Structures are given as C-alpha cells and as structure tokens.
Amino acid sequence: MTLMGCSRRSLLIGAGAAVLATPALAQRAWEPTRPVQFIVPAGTGGGADQMARVIQGIVSKHKLMRQPMVVVNKAGGAGAEGFLEAKGARGNPHMIVITLSNLFTTPLATGVPFSWGDLTPVAMLALDEFVLWVNAESPWKTAQEFIAAAKQERLKLGGTGSKQEDQIIGVAMAKATGANLTYVPFRGGGEVAVQLVGRHIDASVNNPIEAVTHWRSGALRPLCVFDGQRLAGTEKITETASWSDIPTAKESGMDVEYLMLRGIFMPAGVQPAQLAFYEDLLGKVRETQEWRELMQQGAFNTTSLTGEAFRAWLTREEARHRGLMQEAGFVA
Image (cartoon, helix red, strand yellow):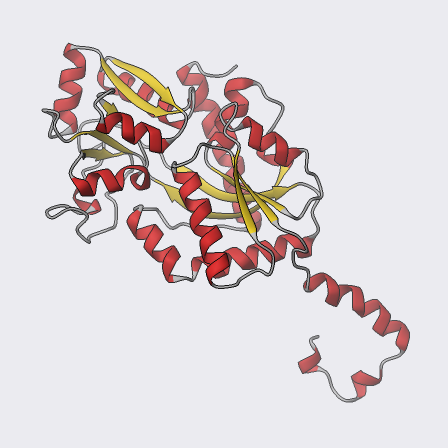
C-alpha cells in the first residue's frame, strides 16, 4: 500500500511496523551514488559504441541520473575483456555493460570462462540488422551480381572480429551460394566501413548504423539485408533510396537470416532495487526523441524485453548460437 492510499488510521501504526517499512521504501528509492561505468565490449565507432554513447548523451541531456555515466571501450579478446571485467564486479551496481551477440559467440569461440548467466540481464533495447555492403564504385548493383562474381574469383569480405557474428554470416553466405569469400576481420564496424570506402576489401556485412553515413554520402551501396522481411524505414536516406528499398537476402537468392542483440546487463549479485533503477532508466531513454531518431537512422528492429521474457530469449539464443558456431566450425 502506498502512502497516498493510506487511511488516517493506518498512519497511527506502531513504531515497530514503521521500522519494518523503512528499508522497503529506501530499497525502492535506490540510485547510483558514484559515476556509473558503461562497458562496451567492442571497439570505438561500431554499433555498440555508438548506441552506448547515445544513451550516455540522453541520460546527461535529460538529467535522468544524478551521477555521470562514463563509457569505457574494452574490445580485447573479441569482447572477452569487457565481459570478464563485468563478471568480476559481482554485486557492483555502478557498472553496466552493453552486449551484442558476442555475448554468445566469444565464449564459444575462445573457451573463455564466461556466459550470460554470469551477469544480470537488464533489458533488450533492440535487435540490430546486418546488410551486405559494397563500394559504390564497384560493378555490383545486386547481391546476385556480387555472388556471381564471388563464384568466379575469391572476394574479400570484411567484418568485426574473428569467429563472430559477421564471419558467421560470411560462412552461411558461402554455404548457401557456393561463393568464394575470404573473411578479413577488423576491430570495429567503423573501421570496417572505412576499409570498404577505401576499397581495401570487396564487401562487408556491417550493421546499418555503422555504414549509413557512407551510404548517404554516396560512397557505399547496400545489396541486401539478412532479415526475413525488409527494413521498416521509408524515409529517404539518399536522394533515391530508403531502408525499405533494400531487398532481403532471401529475395536475392540467399536463404540466410541473422539479427543481433543490443542489450544491457549488470554484474551478478545486484539487489532487486538496483536492477529496477536501470530498467526504469532505460525505459525513460527509449521514450526520448533522440532514441527514436537513433532507431530510425540505424534501421533497428525495436523489439524490447525485460525480466523473465528476456531471460527466456537469451536461453534460446545461446542454444541457437551454439548450433551456428558448431556448423561453422568455430567452437573452441
């Protein structure tokens, strides 16, 4: 019962009951008492880094938290450095970590002693898409043309990390089409896009937000999206094209689908009220115009989950990634 719902008689409860109620009120009112470290287990400029810094900016601009939020990139070991730091911070409510699907792939590929169960799930903020990109000066206007060329000669496909999401998609493309692809790993999606603009690689499977600036400038061209349906955005990104104009991989003759997690976790062992604070904070972030603009610019799937629904999704995805990694020969 809240104070607003109390009768006058209930305000005359004995001191003992009042003492029992006080911790509960204090628990519900928890908030950070020092700066919050926001771990990004990936390099700068990539999708996870960009999303973390947008969240940081929203929290600061709208004064959603009294303490500052400090973004720290820990990309070592395909994100293992960041995950292990969060695992070792058990009970620390002043740390959060943004996760992508390397939450599943890194432990499987490296054998590092970590799983998502070593953290406290807070919220799925969105699911991220993957697009097959080529340099705008390349001769390939469609995914079919790119695949046909890759059957004639070996082409270089760039992506973030080794034995991670990007390479899984590359292996799936090769198996589905017979394309000859050499995977070239980089530290982050921003670097991948720059390498493709410079024509040091032939194609990439970057997230939309990692390449949209170069698409808008006319430097890159999207060929297909690895989703079961076209992207929702209908506003023009270039003078002639919107996200929804990009065909799916299946439309392009490739039966390949992959969506990536964008979620927030805390260390294990935190208190329910501390978890509730961040669930509420992220809910407020998602209501802002800045967040809606990010979702639109990056063509995100805006699915959001918390609590048991999020945990159930994580359990299913961990099993699915184990199958994908085994099929690709990536399990350590």
